[in-house]
Length: 590
Image (cartoon, rainbow, N blue to C red; front, side, top):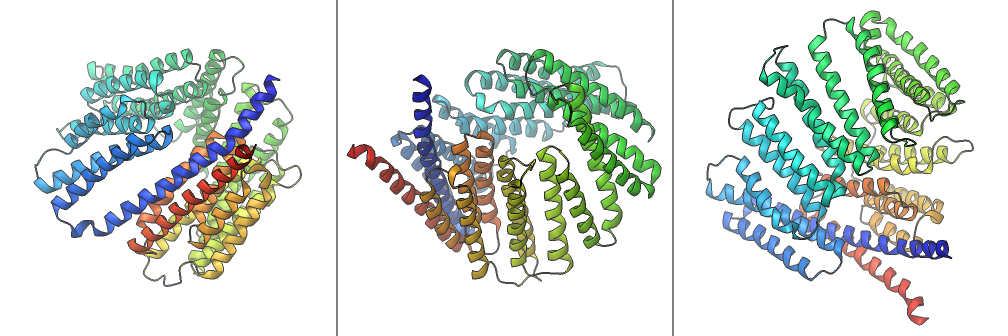
């Protein structure tokens, strides 16, 4: 009985989560419209107008957030308001030319953002962490210190310690950001200790202690809070920092590659064993094991390239084949043991390094030969039981070489770039649904945004190139994109909540030239139905990146961008509200 009730609550909660995120996306597009309109006229306004606009917008966002009852939209509005604080301070500095160092802007920004934390707000806390770290860095660098100064390392440790304690107590969502900051601190301390050139003094001792002090404290805290992934990542970051210090201190010649490779092999294996001991039965001990295996493979392959020269390309081919055989052999054994995991990841590293050494040998002669070789490599990998992430990497390499040949070498039209991306995504989805395929469905939704981001970057640079005078996304491309997207939605109709809403949004967004936004909306729908937080976060980040790309894109004027964004945002909010109302009708009638 309890299981039935829990399942019912979860299934009825899926549409609500979808409606909430679609509303946030629509609000984000409308806010982007305001940004584009302001940016298009920014340099034509006086300083007083700019200050009034930024401060007024900040106040308007705060007033609106005070009347919003839903927690998520309120946090989004307040985060945007705190972002406007930084812009307002920058405008004030431009208007009055105070001559103050730029670190004061970040210090004041951090202090003024603190009152917005009277109620928990993850977005504002992210801003406070990042801005305060920038303020500390700029204070030391602008006062004739450097990043290796002992005073900066001590202040960096103290500030990061305070932020870590607050994160674990009030904002656990920011724990991965803190893992990244602590890893940067450890690596910076390692480089500072190596920069002292084997000196034995107080500065060297403090730098060495700084490599491990805060990471070990973080490991202890993550163990108390049962954060397995954070603990494994922190230990891996500290281990990589210690390894970097050791290499910079004792690296003599190319023969040291073999020694460091063997030491890396043992060091990260010990870290993996430590994680397994701290969390018996956990699965994140594979993180340091995998990182160590790839670093070991990189060091070994570097030694091979240094010793063998041109012969390394054919030795790379032999290494690739032997690695595939070893991976196929180890796939028959249980992958839960650290020994088997390490051997498999080491084979992955040697396989990729051997493949790259072979491809680089022919890349200068012809991209077409390299493309054919990559297609053969991808086919061989697909026939072997390798991890799906390796398969995704092989397909991405195949896509990149295809773009390099068709778009850059034979100068195909710009629309051909979109045809390549659609073909690459379609082939990958088909390969994922073949019998005995090693590609999970999740990998397809990871592959799609990566291809889109790669297409964005290439399209951006091709439009900047004055020699490119082709039409931007003609009607036939829009029709092809629309048909492709509808086929995608129909293929995943059982895994997407509210298919009618998704199809309606897809048609409208593709008609407005927002094909990428439509795919991101479909990915959000799939991740909500499958309760996949990683894919959900990835697609939300992709929307932010898309808005950034649209801002810098030269294919449309600011007025056109604003019009498309405003129409898209209003359409998403309107259709979402309509679907939500229709979903409530059966309950009201009953």
